[in-house]
Image 1 (cartoon, one colour):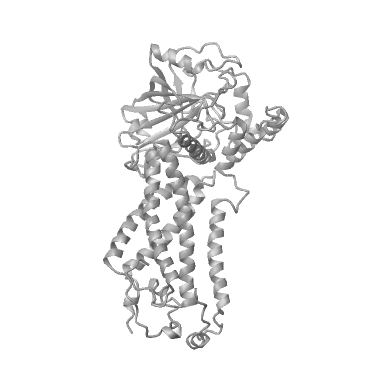
Image 2 (image 1 turned 60 degrees about the vertical axis):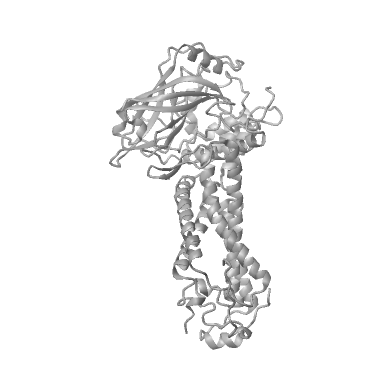
Length: 368
Length: 204
């Protein structure tokens, strides 16, 4: 590096401006300042210089803390089973959405039934929540992925409240279980959880994935061929016979076997029902349902033909990001959607890295 | 006085500044979108993919033009270490301009994601659907993006060093004559006036 030339004679001759050009030290300082400012701006945007921000890492860290670290598994909905089938569209929803899968016809589907939480060895009867995720793949390569739950509302409306709920549910180091006082305080501070708590209160854990209704929870938009947007929510309603006696809290590993037994007899079916919002219905609040008189469209049937164990099944490497949508469906202003999308991506990043390190399979763990 | 041979060809200058804006935006978009759970995640991601493909297409155009039209020579008196740093960093910038969009595309393919550019446009997969491949490419995508940002900072510092300290015409060769006050008005360091420029086919 050659030392800088002050070159003051040239500078003064050619710059008539009253302010003298900075000396060499000032110029080096200017370069250092410009480069540091760019680096600092990057540090802020990337997170390290903005420690207050709620990041996907923090949410996934908390899920991991609550469910335990199980390498290779999803950080939430860790226990599940893959299902293969198709969607037979009735064509009824095609007037509202130009997505090819709503035109009359058949679209292949890879789904996954799961339990909430990060523990792949959780007892099936521990909680009443069940989830159902679907990936529809159109002939043109576009996909619709949706993750649904068997409750009609989500406990909270915002990512921040979800994060606080995770913290309130953190296991107490003394007991290994969540602190009931802390959870009570969380619910008291979050009255929007009332609808969910009312649903969960006397809800018994279902003995079958096949007899549950699953709700998309968040609002979306259907976009028709002319570009018109209609706010919608969807759910799938089972057409698989009456529900059987509920599980007890100790029941372990019964749901996947029950699904196999049903599928050995006949395919399982759900009707895909789309609710159309009226103007003014909330789209940004997953804790509130829309009035029951809203119009519904029977978009078609989801038919499941067979199940696969999740450690080798087709759903294992699918991230059921609810914002992977075909042209004709768009996310709403519900803030949970972006949070789900980014947290699922972080969970996917972690578990695929663990899977890669273990040679392409979920790392072996001993069931407890 | 005609100094046009000391300037980058005008299409090269247009592409340089257009891509500078795009690449720096892209680095901030990428870093920001994975570090937030807000709706910024959604719209930044929707911007990230078509912008990445645009950068890939422009990088191909730029390399073609670069091979067709030789850039101005580096100053003859540039010390060997700086000459090496200039060449190496420019090759690295070119390599990363191609590598990052291609790795991003392959990474989404390996993750089984549709490579959607918006408005129903989906690119074909360029890698097998494989979580281990995804994991490797995902790591590479982030690591090389940080390397690109570091290289861009180095490039920026070097450009300012040429413009403010050495005042040797290197920064001026990439900007327009008018409106650039750095080394336009100032002749190069006195001892070098009249030195014949050495032909230099290296990438700058």
